Image (cartoon, rainbow, N blue to C red; front, side, top):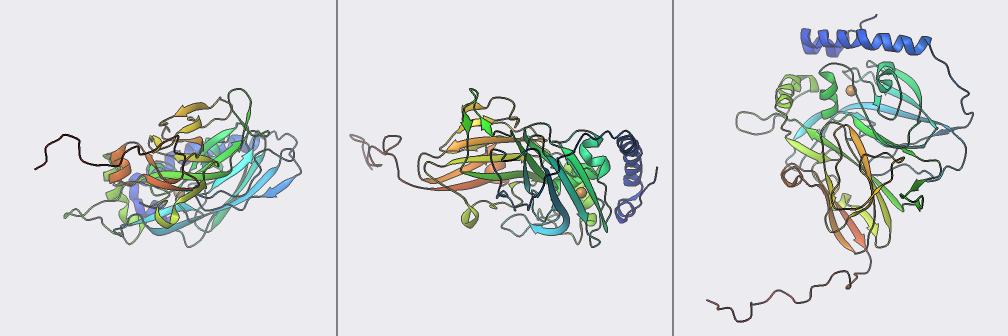
Length: 380
Ligand code: CU
């Protein structure tokens, strides 16, 4: 076994080094087994390239596969960068796939192959990898994708199961939760080849798809209660670890920042359009709710081989998973889409908005009488 001593192991000291050594020892065995017992079936000859979009947007894709199984090539580049996570200017030295928190949603069909090239530029400080919950074996590809700064690696896996699945960084030991809560998560959507269906097999199609990745941040405060700013991720490590052990996040946000999906970044739709919302959380449980709307069809656990639940008010996304909810908007207006732990939504940031254009339907709702004095009540 070769132990890679990177700048990060030097920075985090003996405890981190020991953890890294343990993990590398165990994953090294898995990686070796994967290499020497490989038994590849015939691979598709068709190849297509995915150009990932920045969430909440999703790259163009067919809902029903037009061709047979395809190798879908994609490159994700790790950017270690300082991001602003709220309107007070609080910063985090984030770890990202392709520069966004969360990383892109990658869409393929069942029995396609994802061929990922993971690039860790030389300007980065840390080792990274990726564990795809959509994949099978070698720690979800985590054992085969460790890259130090200045390296890249290519992994191919078959998307055997339909559904939405988290991917995240998992470099070993305490680096695993630290990289995840510093931003390194994303999701894969594996559509059935003939598209989504309800419990009776009726096709379900969407007009728009949005990807909401929820992250819990742990940003330390100084003695006066103000959020601390650190020159580098490594400088924040010890303080963040202490906070993480308490399990109380400083922020819970959608798409990397309080208000990332409100105001000018609001998600748009029109009355009559069907929207698919993919929601992931790689670390903590969450419970999405659309105020003034519903989940018409919800794959709460995110797996399309199970029939969707219908007419949900709130749905539950287990930490370490993704879910998908489909809704046809029936009224215009602004809808809040939030984590219905309302403390996390309003005080910590886990809220987004949809702006829906169209004609109001008075039959569905109307204000029968405007607010006015209570008849017969005394006034002072
Ligand atoms: Cu990482």
